[in-house]
Length: 263
Image (cartoon, rainbow, N blue to C red; front, top):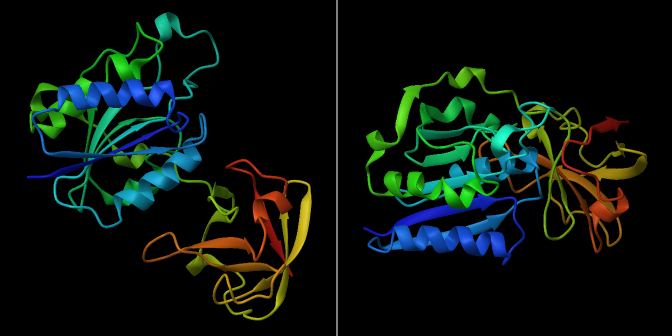
């Protein structure tokens, strides 16, 4: 059976780091009919990682899909990390059957809390290498891909202890400069204001936007506040500048930057 492995990490595309991780994965799973899909997220950004993991995990995936997720800011404490120790690795199976092997850091799994069927600690070394995602973690991914879960899994964990995902913040900036927000369309205070103007404040920047039913329902050069293309059954709201970059307009805000919407 052909298998799909998503590899999501905060390494630059086509970088040495990604190359070395993928090399180990291919080597350890050469016997499988495996398709590997690598995706980069911004460095140390668990908010963006959490969004992307959610979007891909709950999207259309073939049976047996596995996700290997590594964004590890190593911020469990602010003091020195002894012997390069860092956040722990966990295994998760979602209700749709997708499995994740993920560094349990920040908001990486926050949006999936209600979708988790099983959530367990992983038996693996957590210190002794600056490059744990290459040196220690790929054998765990290989065990999961080969169905040898009990070789690497430990006690069940409490998924309700995962942190709630931040509300009303910048979540992701896509390749077109559109700003994806963590505001769900069902919770959007402007949902009954179609065609009206609002003000959006992000950081020190403020701009006027038109509340629309779709991103392209504005003239060239106009800013739109609209239901976005992500979020599945309850889409996230999105900021779109037709013919330009909304991210540039708001000075390229980092993930987690608060968003204020006013009339």
